[in-house]
Length: 384
Image: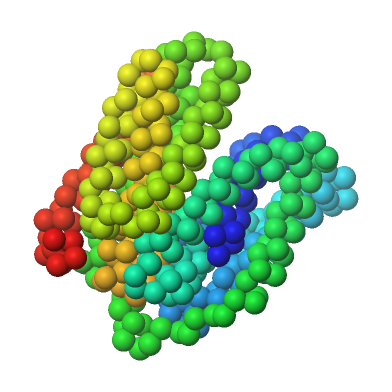
């Protein structure tokens, strides 16, 4: 299940590595490829809640298999369209149309991957190991994001379109591993009735939205902020960004294996700790010394890794597991969309750390929302 969830990270970050080569090979502009990537991502918005309901109705295993099939078909069509455009075998309009179909399939099916894997892991783990199950799936996603670019870069040395072949074959490996696992039964009627969204769910979904916006703004703000230390040396900046993202991925894995899997803290304690760590991390990233920048980036990533299973487990007290996972995925996508809207506005300020300041603001809102959740919750005996 962790491997299947990790395919999402491999596909997202691996494709980003291949984009410069695809621009040259297909003679399509970077803006066209950016629009294609955005199309696939934004389709997560309507499809994630729908898949959450299907998880409750038919069980997790069929939904994961459908997501893997959609993953394989979408990247097969993406590779085919790219190859046809590179060889001028079809008109540009036909090739772009094939790429659009590929991204639509991706957005409508792969949106089910992580929620279904999470629910399947939760149901197989049982009540006593729910946080550890979520941590395992999240660690797979983090590993995919860490190693996806490395695998894609290695494949580029073979052929410009070789990363597409990697992304076609990977879901077949996941299918082979998952087919032998027993599925989980559909959720009972009482759980299905809990699939409806209520006002009590809003703070948890707002936490998910603010978290994804904070992380996205931090990532986009790395390059402008590094200008303070490195000037306009783009090569040095790119090198440092790569190392910072790697440090962030390692910090996320450390949180997942060191805190979440051993289940050392309650979900509410995790949520409050996450807000404090993200605020400390961003404050350190506003400092000038580069070594503080690294520590801040790691702290923020560590805190963000703690937060995700925390608000998901808390939301699952209000919603069925499948519905909660679907709505969390939708909120994450909305957070990325909010980040995209903020970027042009923040960039106009001309301040090198403007993105990080915006991330600090969203982290403050995240902490305030976490505090509101804590005040509204009556502590359970376990948390006391």
